Amino acid sequence: MARIKFEAVGKQYPNGFSALSNLNLEIADKEFLVLLGPSGCGKSTTLNMIAGLEDVTDGNLYFDDAVMNTVPPHKRDVAMVFQSYALYPHKSVYDNIAFGLKMRKVAPDEIKRRVLDAARRLEIEPLLERRPDQLSGGQRQRVALGRAMVRQPQVFLMDEPLSNLDAALRISMRAEIKQLHQAMQTTFVYVTHDQAEALTLADRIVVMRGGVVQQIGVPDQIYEHPANMFVASFLGNPPINFLEGQLLRINDAVVFERGALRIALPAATAARVSAQVGREVVLGIRAEDVAETDSPEAGACLSGRIGSVLPVGSDQFVEMEVEGCKLFFRLGKESHRRTGSNAILAVNLNRLHLFDKQSTESLL
Ligand SMILES: Nc1ncnc2c1ncn2[C@@H]1O[C@H](COP(=O)(O)OP(=O)(O)O)[C@@H](O)[C@H]1O
Ligand SMILES: [Mg+2]
Image (cartoon, rainbow, N blue to C red; front, side, top):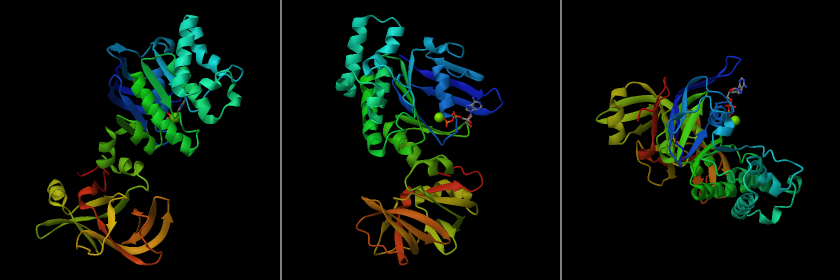
């Protein structure tokens, strides 16, 4: 069993750069935790601290109840898979997978059993005699996974393991990694900058920016209730639309206003933000939260001129100019919107997001 706990953990590199500040996080045994954020936000630094490849400069890191800060990597019972597969070029696939076990003096019969078992699960049995340069990128990544699997670690660490693969292979490997987690019953910590990957794989996601955690939650929470504008914009494709404006009270309703645009907030939302009336806010509308309508309702619609229309196979991305803002929406492929025409879209009022303009924090 391996529960990992960060207690006020920080990381300063020797040059004084602070790559991680005050991380408080408990990763449950057997959880699939994803660290998500843009390049340079401190994901690999965090993962490397779990592996023992980087030292912890502030706070404490625990495995179960033991402080791990100064425990060397080989005593941590973790296995790591990197973006670059780092296979030994002159060894066969079999020997690449077996190497770590040989170094640990595992009995030859046991090595064979584990290598064949991993190869069967990863469907690379026919490749065991080949060398890495005789494999495709996806096959090499499977070998790297196999090498980590046979260690039977308590903690499986993965640093952007799919980033070097082409799009189709990335999707099928996602499914395999998910199955692998279920089969192995170990704690997985997975680093990615790809929001779709995080949403598919994670039990919980930690969104990071500039070494600071922005939000921790299950994928639905992160997507449906982003804590701030950064989290809202980092997940979703095309990204969420933001409109700056003001909250007003008109009769009994709380209304978002920008120029001629007025959106009346549903009662539950209005109740939450009633103290914010009169303030500058940012309205967030996800690309999928609109629909074409023949009977526009006042206070629940956007109207504007259609800019570009971008078919993406299953759907189309439609750009619409509303009160001086360029917004992007996802409409079904049956929509016949044309560039230059005017359109009215009904907004799903129950899925609106509202942020404080100054702090960028969610008001909901
Ligand atoms: N050895 C180092 N010395 C100084 N700064 C570093 C070192 N390694 C990484 N950094 C910096 O720390 C920040 C976080 O890096 P990293 O954890 O690799 O980010 P990510 O994996 O999220 O892309 C980056 O700004 C990076 O330049
Ligand atoms: Mg990294």
